[in-house]
Length: 205
Image 1 (cartoon, rainbow, N blue to C red):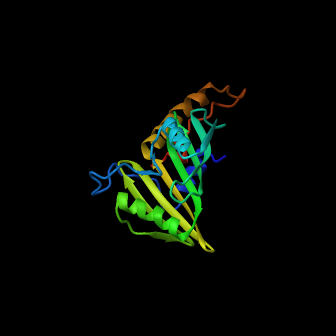
Image 2: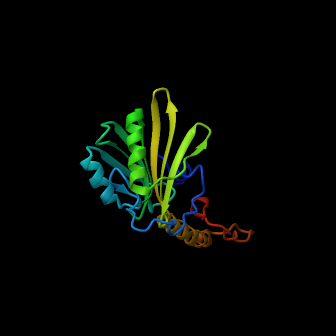
Image 3: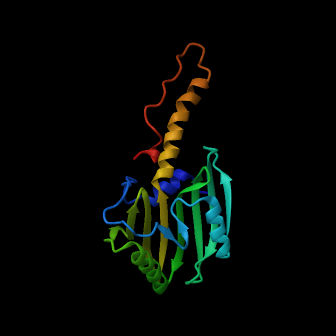
């Protein structure tokens, strides 16, 4: 199962996570969401929506951080009628990063892209190698559509990121780590190790 850091890197590989508090011209537009799953959704919201789409979600505590739940599931796109894989990492039961991916026909992919554009406005596509991307940022949250062509199909994913949740997680980890280091017994003749000077990489802004 993917860790939070892996999901962040996968979701943000083309640009950094510097999410502005509010993007220009976004007043009055709907909250960022996809297939009825909003960025920053609670786990209860996610499970209820996935259940309504005939799917299921399973979550486990992350080994490296007990505050993090790593979840994986599958659901059915109600229009395309194809399986959609879901990965998410939640902090304190709120989704920080959520990714939905599927292999789509050209028609079904166009429905994904057009639905996002109709809701959130036109944006310029970016390309890196064989991968294309559309991205929308609003009020510290982000939604991103990425895709690549494989034969007659498109492998597409939609990532939803809540920057506020990730900021709090990074700050909490930074605050806990020096205390944990101080509690560790020092070696017989060695001084106590110094506190780290930076927060974990996935929490930087």
